[in-house]
Amino acid sequence: MVSAVEFKEGLIFVDEHNQIVQVLTYQHHRKSQARAVVRVKLRNLDTGSVIETSYRPEDKFKEVQVEKRPKVYMYSDASMAYFMDSENYEQVGVPLEKLGEQSKLLVEDMQVEGLYLDGRFFNILLPSSVVLEVVETVPGVKGDSVSNVTKPAKLSSGIEIKVPLFVNAGDKIKVDTRTLEYVGRV
Image (cartoon, rainbow, N blue to C red; front, side, top):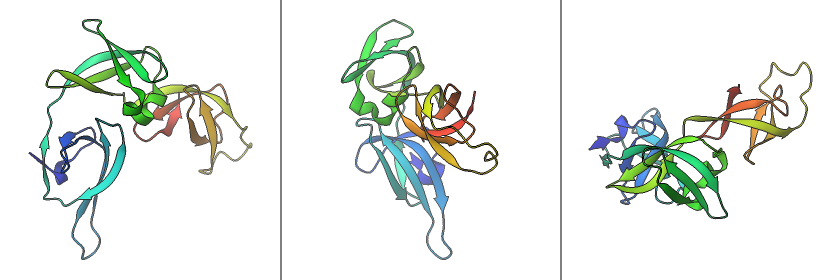
């Protein structure tokens, strides 16, 4: 059993609705005289949906022991993403809707981890960040690099995120796979 105050990013557990979820982010929060709570952003590993909720610190959950095996992303079609097991070269498909936003970050030959529960493959874990190329963005204004101003940029995978003004088309940037935010230039 794991309590809400013991949450850490990447932890997989069974929630109060009997669903297998993974902790994406968490924050311990206490307002003056109010009772402390743990605010959590969770990904449902069966459906791929992301939810935000809060728990009391004393809430306890069953931690799920999953087996992780290395996989390589191969390709996607209209409804499925296909991965090859690095150990036995077996190919498995995952519905794109189950991957959710993660599917937009997949790059050919990307190393991921396959999650197995009771010997059954049920989802993947992306690395914490991925390197993508900026395909299209508006040019930055010279001298405006000191402030925290951002602009939209379209990446090689098709997603659009906010980047600092000094990032230009053709630059390779690192993107956080959990939050879909700019991390830095490569």
